[in-house]
View 1: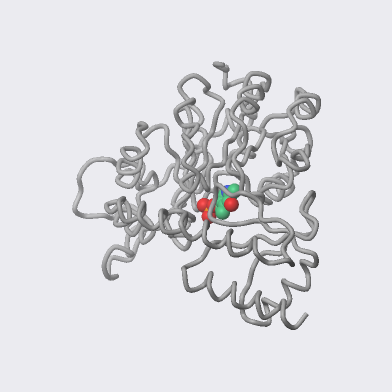
View 2: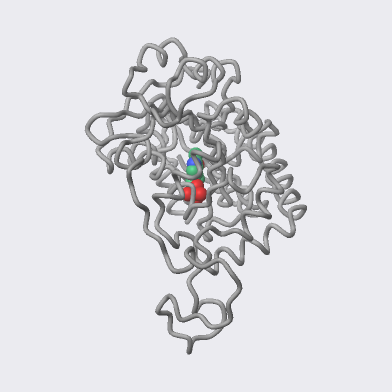
Length: 350
Ligand SMILES: *Cc1c(COP(=O)(O)O)cnc(C)c1O
């Protein structure tokens, strides 16, 4: 469906005159930079402000993603994109987002920070799929964004395309598809659906498959009109020089990234098989991501024991539908083996 995006954007954002920084006002070639109050007696690349629009990085990324540069936003992590999307489309105290717990926690936190209400429609028990009838019922004229995490964190599974399609056809708002884990899933990205649906925003990140969480580089991929809005309201220099440089280096070796992902997928299989053998673990949920959600008889005890052994996993047992569940990131071969060994020890002494 094609939307008149203007009808979804907050009035103050439409009217906003954005900050114009020194580096975006001049686009020619210069050799003497007396425009940005930098101290020239510094060394190397850090003495200058970074490219506010990260064009070199975007050219490389957009070639890999098969999109145009103006369909790509780069943020200080995809968490920045989540916040900016809420601020672009949701009027505080009036508009709402919709999320489907158990899911990634930042959607709700970002909404709360912005005084935007959150409608929650739980995933379905057992399958962890979207509850489409309940979602359609919960949507109203103030529901501006629905966040769909696919594959979902912390359940690890992919969501049904048919369900997402139904929601796309019925929501007069933005549908965010958070694909932080897509590289572990073998699924096709929703990027290919943006041309026909200008209300889709796909989020991806260098933090997971790319093994570069410390760089804080996240992407929003969408219709160029949406990307313009995010660029309009972002902090001018939101991605630092060093991160842009290191990301460029990473991208020039895409095949190395793919190899590392394949290793993790193999390890996911090995770890899942091993975990399934423990009587204390009652369920290992199927995963399309780089982590495994497991159900145990006593999540808190297992969590505490592992922590004593200096192994930290994520205790998710307080989340909806996740009673007694732990989320375990697939680590290196050696780390996974240490986890298995520690669990064996726990079973013996318990
Ligand atoms: C890890 C994660 C992110 C965070 O990405 P950053 O780019 O590191 O901010 C976003 N979404 C989901 C679902 C995640 O699990």
